[in-house]
Image (tube, rainbow, N blue to C red; front, top):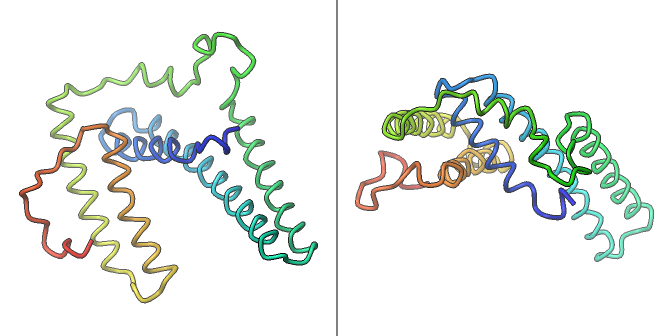
Length: 189
């Protein structure tokens, strides 16, 4: 069910929030854990997605039965690894409770202890962080060979993709000035 209901998108948002708040000085360990755990589960779901797509293509292309079974087996293995991690880390500890609010995950409880910034200060801190993050992404991409599909172009796309995820994750915490000119060398992005 976790996989079938597109849990990857909310996990990207959780990872983005972990990335943002981890660097804002707000209970860094909590947000580092949120970032890491959501990435692990998202990667595991990505593996499931990949092998399911391969298994379907094997059927569509009438591949030999052994190839199709191998892809299906890899998909089932990915399902097992994902579920084992989810269970081991109590991500679904409340699945049998009628009132799930009575047993919130420890990360939710820990977030209640965070001393959040005032909205005005948070806006300033977010702006500084975003400027730094965009600079880091730009520097990282400048080091890539964009002629190399996997280690260049695809990696740069993954880096830039985070910007839109950050905007989505903070739900209005960043507002762009449509009249502003893009920073030097960012027009191509």
